[in-house]
Amino acid sequence: MDAGEQRAMLKEVQQADFVVVELTLYTNTHPNDEDGLEQWRLAIKEASRARKAYEKRYGPLSLHSIPSEQAIEMGWRWNQAPWPWQM
Amino acid sequence: MWVYEKKLLYPVEVSECNPRLAKYIAEQYGGADGELAAALRYMNQRYTVPDKIIGVLNDIATEEFSHLEMLATMIYKLTKDATPEQLEEAGLGAHFVNHGHALFYSNAGGVPFTTTYIQAKGDPIADLYEDIAAEEKARATYQWIIDVSDDPLINDSLKFLRERENIHSLRFREAVEVLKEERDRKKIF
Image (tube, rainbow over all chains, first blue to last red; front, side, top):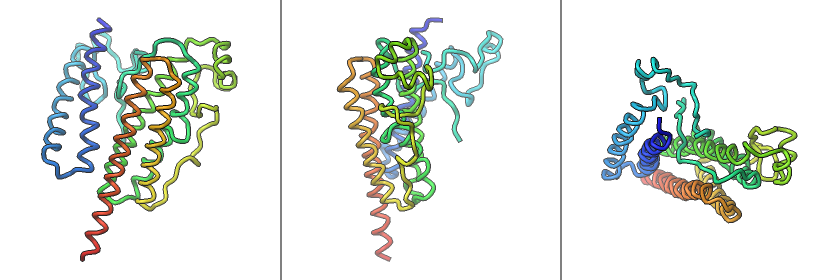
């Protein structure tokens, strides 16, 4: 596995997830901003897409995602380095 | 409840082993205006505020825990390869004899974290003003750490965190306005 590529794909997930974090805080205090709410909805969709692309190659980032049978056969385990602070 | 995500909120990379910088970053890890204080403060206040602002406290508290993990990653990476002599030279000799290479919730001066840093007053306006002040103090602390840091990679992550404090402060200010509107609306009837 190419660590550089994994890092790049993870960064895409981090970026997409961050947009959700930011827009969630925004919509908390602007509940009637329809444009904001639509951006927030689309951000969640994009974050889901980026996450699926990453997890398909490198395994689940959380246990809300189902590990594939193939991943487990290939030796993927949740309790497997690197953890975020080791990357 | 919370579910662990095997990733950081924002990437943390370090240029080289630098225990002195780690010691300074501890101010935001276990200090009075740091991320642990912020997370615990908001998490506790959320139970006794009006429904309209629970989300702000809940979600900012959650984000603070991800900031805490970023700071832990910085401290871990900056100190993991340091020899006891290097730790001592950096002013972390006392930390080393108590904790070895482990992380601990203390400030830059080595003072352990205490909940006396934070408050929950049961008065939403009083709590929110404390929260705004906390965010501004954290923003200033990040700036002072950036000013004494010469690690461009760490500074990139610290600048991200500094900007988040600005956004949190803004959202808390808006929450105050939400409460004022609610109060004024009630007076009409």
